[in-house]
Length: 88
Figure 1: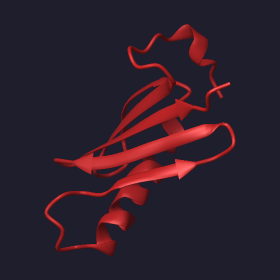
Figure 2 (figure 1 turned 90 degrees about the vertical axis):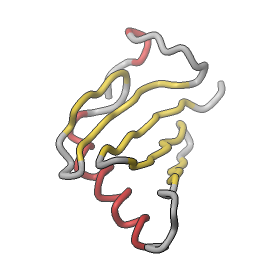
Figure 3 (figure 1 turned 120 degrees about the vertical axis):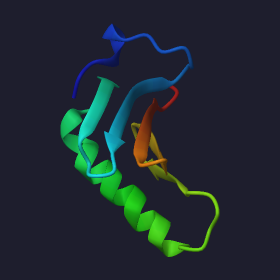
Figure 4 (figure 1 turned 90 degrees about the horizontal axis):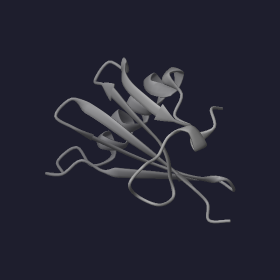
């Protein structure tokens, strides 16, 4: 995993961001976000949307671990993931 110390984000606690298209192609990755995760991130967003197919708004998925969390949301064929580090 890359060190997020090389990247400065405006929001405290944000350690990385990833942007993928609807096919899982990585469009951008900064900080701890790894380009190789783009396909998995897009797939998670698609699967979550199928839980409530008639919803007018796409779901926001939060995956938590001891080291932080990842927030995932798709909109207009673009999936965005925000990696947040746990407070120390």
